[in-house]
Length: 331
Length: 279
Image (cartoon, rainbow over all chains, first blue to last red; front, side, top):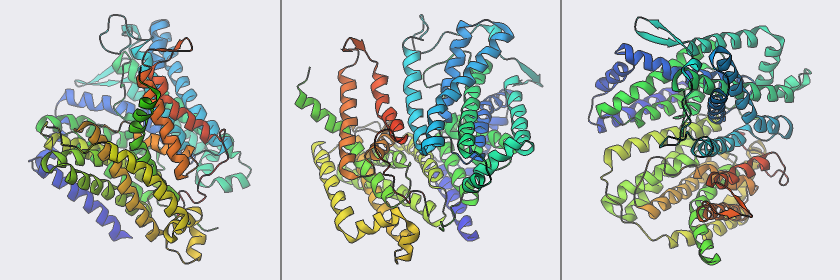
């Protein structure tokens, strides 16, 4: 089996080398452009950390569901709904820290609500969560577009966008030698710690993992599998929505059409890379952020940004070949 | 306002890529391989069809498009059957690779010129004929019956002397052919490729397949209904239905919402192939 893995990795690298050659650049040049674009200046580093924030939150959401054996592809929709709801809660609600808290809670609640149909159908009707969440993602995209282009559109705006939030609702940042690090990102680190603690140290977290490892064995051991599925999807959705809220409050300060450039999808890769280890979510989100941020620099350099998306797909394939293999079914 | 007949023709036109992609999904999922990579396969075919079509004419565009989709479909087969990667993850990865690669190729090679294209009507006729052909193959031929058997229970199929991996290889080629036609048809409508031009059609085709209980003829009907809904949403833009103006986004969402209900088992009995996702 080992040589097959080597063949897969070699195949991916060959395809990438050909692509870079087609673009008329040398692979070394492309790589250094990518790294310079994401680390080269304090501004680039700030941007990379900003990219990392939504990837980390959405990644935690996917990771948590995955630990219970569920594949929450719906994180994209939950993120969108969370971001949108947090924005309008912020526009209507009070300012200051209380307003921030309210907007965050509203975002998390909206994310959980958007995951609810998939959660119920998985838990009680045994309908595959992948299909339902894909469908709900498409509904979320249509719904948020409609809101932001119609009833929720800022009066004076030329494009589909909400009004800007008041500055008192902005989540602050600390300055590390010119690189600004948002408290939103730090909150993500804390959440990783909480998830690690809960999964590893609490009985409910243990039941959660057993459900994911083997649902039949869990049922035999007296664990309520349906309740754990429900809990997993709702928690995952809430964290996705929370990520959307943080994105609005820490960085964007408004909601607009096509708010997410595919964070939901990238976060699947983040969670797959992390596997069973919560802390790996942080470097994994960092890696994907580097690709996203550096991809823009590559684009300007003359290598189309699509190549970074190809890299993401290949990373997912290789990781899955190592870790998410199907065993032959035996009855 | 168009006559009902014209509206139906528009609906058939909009349903054609869904019908092809639905058949692609049928070939894969009847054999037990979950395929959410239909979107990426269509997209790659559309891109390659357009680029080759500009340079060498529509016939080569068609051949190249089908080849590209088939290559991706075979990659899905390789990933799920040989590497035994989780089928959902493989499908997602393929969609990413296709989205990235088409963006890359289009930016590097698109000349801005429109491709000469075939007329659309033959595709539409071919789509309907293909449904009948697939239905016959699945129920009347040795290969079709074996495919369904493998999809229903790969373990018992193996005990009966079948080799699921080989049978799925042939099915994956069929998936490539059909998704290739679907992508090529999108270019036949427009002559050019634009980023993400499939715009979720692969997922709607999957929805049609699920709603139809993984059967070809009901799948055709579901795809036609989705095409009709799409035609209606274009026609009804801003017009009141029974006194209420429903936004276009609502009509876009209907296929997805109906599928969620179907997954909840609220529509009919569960007809999911028993061996779906099993190895």
